[in-house]
Amino acid sequence: MPRDPLSAPSDQPIAATPTGDGRDGATTAPPSVVEEVLDLRIALDRDLVGEVRTRFRYDAAAPYEVRLTFHLGRPDEADWVFSRDLLRDGLLSLSGHGDIKLWPASCPCHGATVHLALDSPHGSALLEAPRPQVAAWLARTYTVVPDGWDGELLPSDEELAALLADG
Image (cartoon, rainbow, N blue to C red):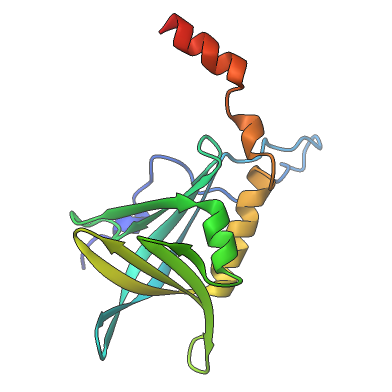
């Protein structure tokens, strides 16, 4: 049987909610990366649907963005990076324009889902993700960087000016 590419460690640990070790009451620092792997349905043709393993990744070092990696462990891996706000809004209503659009949906066979329409010069894809799992993952990202705090993690105008002056 082939080795599962998801069992290999990623460059960053998969984060969970912070917990204490229970011995001295101390808690660990909140994780800076939140990852989850989900199987998304993908429309391959008019009447043909497949699945694609997708890693959802949020890193506090880039507080405004989320990264989706498709085809995990394969040479044709593809990353899509877009706004965390776009994903949040797409869970509730039509969100985005241009090369990425998201919207909620519901059907008797799959329940609550979120659709992702991706378009690039190399092709396009229509994917469907389980909305409860995406919403739960997104909520964990807000435990790392609460809504509205993203700007606190970025350099100030003064820090940027100093960096550019030293350049």
